[in-house]
Length: 163
Image (cartoon, rainbow, N blue to C red; front, side, top):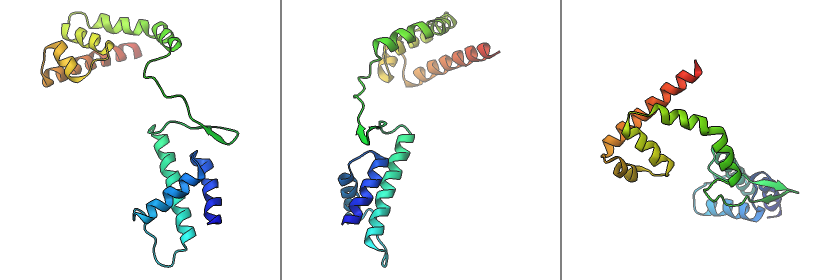
């Protein structure tokens, strides 16, 4: 057991979780049959392999953005504050300054297409799906058509800016 605990401590530094939790998860997955050990494989080596696999899975999940990034300070993980979903006042001000011209260009290009203008307003108001359908007074296919026109409008602007 001492060798497993030592290995768990080493792996936990990489994963950013408690060594006891990592070891317990490896043993639990083994006992539940999620991981199977073949005859002749030493149990300590097998459970170390399971811990290594758990660490690898966690690293891949973080690379894909499926987990919050853990920051270590003096070897101890520090969990970030939970996101509120709203941008900070600084981020909102920076966005308004940096993106105002782009948004104005998009709104100007949409003049003449009332449905696309309404779609843009709905997106500003964080509407989605059924709310946008109700705003535009269209069904699902109608919303898809308006979104397609909006995408083409954006693509046209992108190619104009690039050239």
